[in-house]
Image 1 (cartoon, rainbow, N blue to C red):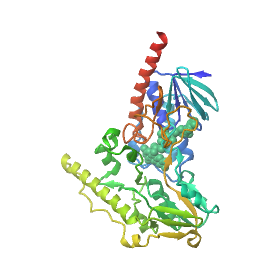
Image 2: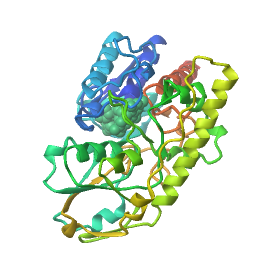
Image 3: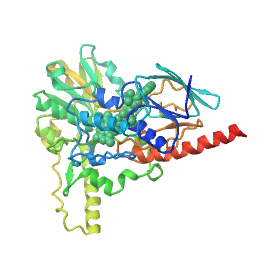
Length: 419
Ligand SMILES: Cc1cc2nc3c(=O)[nH]c(=O)nc-3n(C[C@H](O)[C@H](O)[C@H](O)COP(=O)(O)OP(=O)(O)OC[C@H]3O[C@@H](n4cnc5c(N)ncnc54)[C@H](O)[C@@H]3O)c2cc1C
């Protein structure tokens, strides 16, 4: 049995950020990673993916992008290299290929059982990722077995899919990017569109994420939002980190030949049906975008920024013809569609966590990453301490604050042991 003060589970950006904060505070710890450092960026992303946040927005504790293109969007090999160099920069104590199989309460802390030995520590930080397991709707189980179904985390490139048409379900960042890539590869693509957040890549001379940052939207804390559960389920933006900075919104996709449909409502064998809600969901997204543009324009006016380019005309809305053509039902065989890609997001799961801190909804119970179990913390969860908590650029502030919590907890435990 190996002993340390803090066991961090997960060697992605969250685990590394916490490790860096613990190193700065002189706290003995280990980072247990079931694969390699930055494993999810290696093995659960598609080949052409680039970050949708610009490189200057990859700030981590004691680390920032120093390459030649801070306004560009890192491709996956660059992200992996960025995080690997980060880990090396402070000699992060990462133990790779150590899959955690159980975390159980033990005297004055926790026992962590892994495929590479057992550990004991007073504190454990769960940094296993907000995008942990595919979230696929139950109706997927009602589709005929002969159809190819895969979640975006298993998609790699068009050529690896069976020939024929593709139904992409979900029109947030992954769904629109993959629909766009498949259409460009000559595939017939149908995109089932649910609730979504439309954003232009650039606005008034800046990357849109620069504006969201300037508006302070990423810094919103859980107590400032009316419906935290909804905020935590907020779909990702319709954005891509393409070098040409083109938008991948629905009008652009329709223009590229992608057939748009409403939310996927039901499935039975080789038939699927869609809700009649395409006009409503796109109108909601367009209205939200108009409000955002108004806030940015007000910020520009208030700052008296004479150099800012003028506000562009309102963006193109989806044409009535595309809405009218939205199918309500499809016979997948008749349409030549043999593949369904679930771009329906992620969920979290902690089957190895034998501590009663997981709610009936499968989510960890926590207050800003502090769980009800003393010494057990989480990092990198959606909207955990602020809206940016699960982003590369956001996990650092949370890590710093939780590291302070851990310092106090360890000091208290030492005082108790000495008494
Ligand atoms: C397609 C996609 C694109 C994204 N693009 C951006 C972007 O452009 N900008 C941005 O800021 N964010 C982006 N994100 C969001 C976020 O940055 C990523 O999800 C990121 O991977 C989260 O980092 P993390 O360290 O919290 O979790 P992960 O990177 O998921 O790391 C968790 C680690 O825990 C390990 N692990 C899991 N279970 C165990 C176990 N039982 N034992 C040991 N190890 C375990 C995993 O192997 C993994 O390495 C994107 C997410 C996705 C899915």
